[in-house]
Image (cartoon, rainbow, N blue to C red; front, side, top):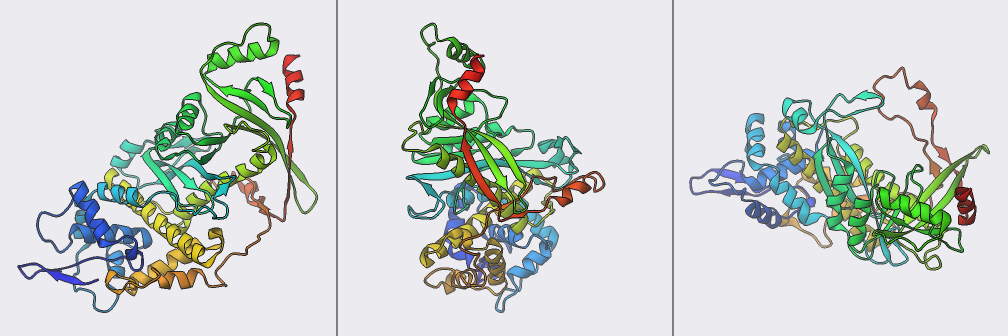
Length: 479
């Protein structure tokens, strides 16, 4: 971290983030600071660029206080002798605000998978998935006023939460886009904003949380294809049965859906003129057989805008839907591997909390990009690279000041690459199928949920998918 001096002789650090500085370059940081109008008006010991790297370092060293994070930044020999107090660091990051971090994330987000990347493509379509999660923030008056109290069937959450919805690229698990807001903001509203990142040639996977004709219409209008799971209480009308057991229907509003359902039962008049999204409905039974012989069947109802049953087989689509869980895996990497399990964001002001969360998103995104680039050069599946090893090595390069702009190497991030591509750190190329039963992961009371601890993962499980025929459903509905 080189030192520069102003005319008055005061020195300040130029800032670095170890080998990650080769991606989050000082020129990129200066550009977003200039764009957001957050360049300091006078020379300080803690200028804006340094504070951007400091906030990013807070994401890497989340278990440390302000002074501990600063100590990690200046730990290597030759670092400047600048020793700010915790109060000075707090005031400097508040002057910075969340706008530069948001703009920096906008520069780094987006899909990265090549056309031959394993797990990211299906029949020429880039598979992406979205979902929503909650991020715990400090229990302060400002955060409570902004976020509101999160509550559910298990009671009221002890901390306010920021709701985050993200669009994740399957296979690489990088963030295509993300939206932050108060917990009281509906997931549907945030996903509507995420439609800005959808493009033709994408296949969007979504769970039952994505519902409503308005959201479906907004997503389909982008030109992307959809593969969504539908709630069991919604029964789309059968407009045309297909030979593979699926059927064509339409996604419409409630009144239009009732009109279509009445017409599909009798078909005595001309079909009503209704505006909607043409969909194909796939109903299947997913049976999980454990090693002890026990079976667990689950009904699966999917809707897709891929209407050609010959080009897009129903059984493959039902199996492809499982990739949607990679969005949950991305949240696991962000909230547990990077942030730390059960850790609450430290910021007591709403803008500071958003700044801290954007820093987490940036560091996560860059770590995933490094892993994808290394996997591409090595010719392996990116899912085999450990995010934990990537982040741990990135922390070491910060402490040792490895990979700063004055020491760039080719290819970039050589220390991180050597660590994550080590044969002992790579996950097996063929891992057995494992099923994790749903359970309460963070119960409010340890006494009320003792039985959930017995839900251990089921290794080597066998999964069978059976497509339900549309003729049986049509006959049942018409009686």
